[in-house]
Image (cartoon, rainbow, N blue to C red; front, side, top):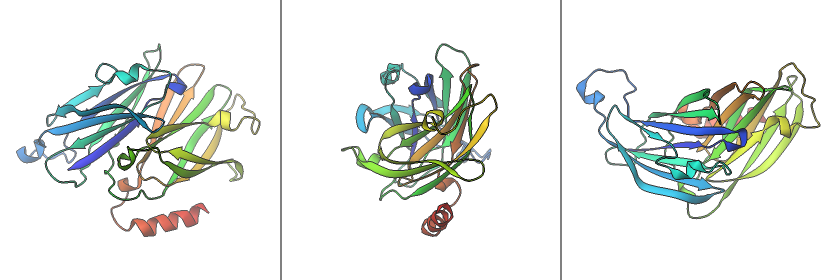
Length: 268
């Protein structure tokens, strides 16, 4: 059974990264069989601008009920705070290529500060076919003189590790009345991270004030393996909040084509 956990650095926002890979039970069952998942074998790759810069085929083995922490100690590339890295931890239990759900955790901390924010989200299936379009709605995007929002697009695809490939994305930034403030049309590299600095993207379009302004973001892209995180940061106090825009596999296991068509009709 296979799954891939996609996560990334956020050096642009001055944040350190740590991740916890877990081999745990989700059902809450106390049966001995379900409490013992068996060992989970992990390989880890790190990418910069679509190119492999770290590759550990036998990164670790995690026993049932245990976890492994990923830091710069066992992944030295994380010590580089000048570049952004996308990391893909491919997790395998037992035989076969069937997907298995497993949640892992990312922890971000402000450089030079003890405050942290963390998030638990599920690993994705390992795609065996062409990635499908997805729709993102991220309503909690805030800006003010002191507050900014960064939206990260971790555009991972293990099937294209041999060359740099790009996918087309359209990102609309909307005012609260629904009017489009700005549209970005981007070619985002696979196996790379794109950080959207909302305040910078709207420079000259809106004037940040002392009051929080809410911006709606609608993004459409080609890769169902894209992990999207939203960082809301008070740049004066250092306070930080983090949320995850969930991928389609969280919500359904049925007719993706029908749901995708309906979503794109709504978006248009």
